[in-house]
Image (tube, rainbow, N blue to C red; front, side):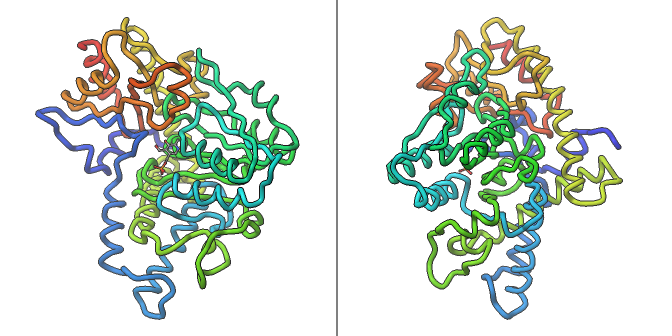
Length: 413
Ligand SMILES: Cc1ncc(COP(=O)(O)O)c(C=O)c1O
C-alpha cells in the first residue's frame, strides 16, 4: 500500500493552480462544491465532441452515448456499494431529486402517519419531507442535537420513533459542523418499527466510503459536485421500493429501472463527468493499493486513505484553532472523537462577524463560506442567525501548508 500524497492528487486539479493577487488560492469551500480533476473536464468536452446525442437512437452516437450512461450507472453503483446499477439514478441536484421523490413517497402515506427529520440537517433533507407530510396529513417530528458538540439527541430519536413512523430522513454528515451521524444505528432502530430511512450523503460522499448494502438504507441521495464531479444529483433506492412506488412520469417514458425515476433528458455530458470523477477516485485507489482487484475495492481503499489523511489535517486545524482566543469552534473538538466528524469545521469570531472573517480571508486568497449553508434549523437552534458561522472545509487536496496560511490569517484578524 503506498502512502497518501496530497501533492500527487493536486496535480490532477487544474483549478488549484489559481493565483489571487499574488497568493496561491486556498480552496476551503469544498462543502459548497469541490474542484474537479482534469479527467472530468476532458470527459465533459469529449462527450460533446464524440457522442452528443439523445437516448435510444439506432445510430452510432446515440448508441455510444447510451453505453457511456450505462457505464456511469455501474460506476455510481460501485461508489455507493450497490451491486445493481438499476438502483441509482441521476437528476438535476439532490434538492430537486428529493422534492420529486418525496412527493411520490408521500402518496403512500396517510393521516396519522409520522415522519422524523433532524435539526442538524441541510434543509434539502428537511423541507421536502415537511411539505410532503403536510400534503399527506402526516405528522413531523424534528429530532434535536446537543449544543455542546452538535451530535444528534439519539434518546429523543428513540422516543419519537414508533410503529406510526413511515420515514426517517437523516444526514450522514452535517455540512455545517461536520458531525457524522450514527446512521447504521438509526437504520436498525427505524427498521425495527417498520420505518424506512432516507439518507442525505451529500456532505459525507467526498470524505468516506458509502455502503448502501451494509447500511441497509432504503434511499440515499448525494451530489457529484461535492465529490469532484459536475453539478448532478444522484439518488439510490432499493429495487423493490423503486419498482413499486408511484413515480410521476410522462408517457411514453420507460417504466423500468432506472428510467422510471429519470424525468426528461439528462445532462449526458455531466453524467460523463460523474463517471470521470469516479474514475479519478478509483485510479487514486489503485495507485494507493495496487492489489485492489475491483473498482469497489479501489474506492474503498481510496476512502480509507482519504479519511486517515483528512483526520490528521483536521486534528491539526482543530488543535490550532483552539489556541486562537477569539475563535469558538462549533461541533466535536475532542481529539479522541475525530472518527465522529469530517474535517468541516465551523467557527465564530468574538470580534468579527462571520461575513467579515470570510471577507478578510478572501482578500488573502483563502476561500471560505460564511452563513448558514442551508443548515438553517441548526443555526437558528444555536441562536446564530442572521450572521451564521464561518465554514472551513478541508478536502483530500488541501495541505498542511494551506491550513498554516489559514491559521496565520485568523491570528492576524
Ligand atoms: C448536506 C447537504 N445536503 C443537501 C445539499 C443540497 O444539494 P444540491 O445542491 O445538490 O441540491 C447540500 C448542498 O450543499 C448539502 O451540503
